[in-house]
Image 1 (tube, helix red, strand yellow):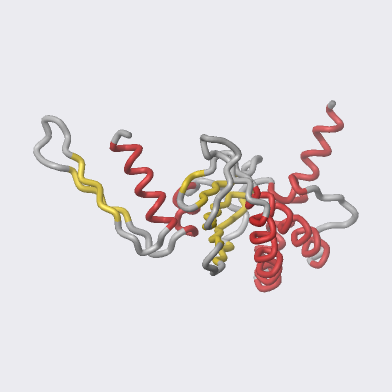
Image 2 (image 1 turned 180 degrees about the vertical axis):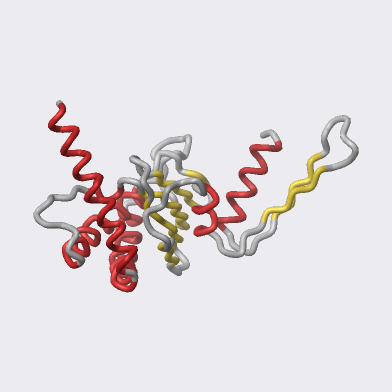
Length: 210
């Protein structure tokens, strides 16, 4: 692993474990001395999310974040919606990247869709539009970090996590806390609902063109 890749990995870990300080000392050929880089985050995933996607056109100001506790399994989450057309979901399991996702993201999607539909109607954004899960996660950027004692991977490359219990772990916590966030932050809730409605209309327009 070259130093730039190693630095990126140190940076990721510093966000995943707030307060942890990592130092990379690089001895470059024909340099005047070692180059030292230090990585530390006091905030964690919300900072990770904002730094990773700093240039995006966010539709709401507040990052939604939560953290659960547990000895066998737990997770941290930060998420925010932007104008970009696709979702951008980053998953880590025991600090290991899972680029192909897996069951924790399924639990996240299951929790977000009914909450966004409900508050879209409460705040008068929706009429009779039938939002799908894809509409509700359009433009979603999220970082999800899961800790589980016995991870189950889909293959030897450890790119996708398949523990079935992680669906309910994430879904239950987000089901409980995300609606409270939408209720306490009506401006953000309306912006998220309008983003989902915009995705719905874009999807309908694509259907009419085919």
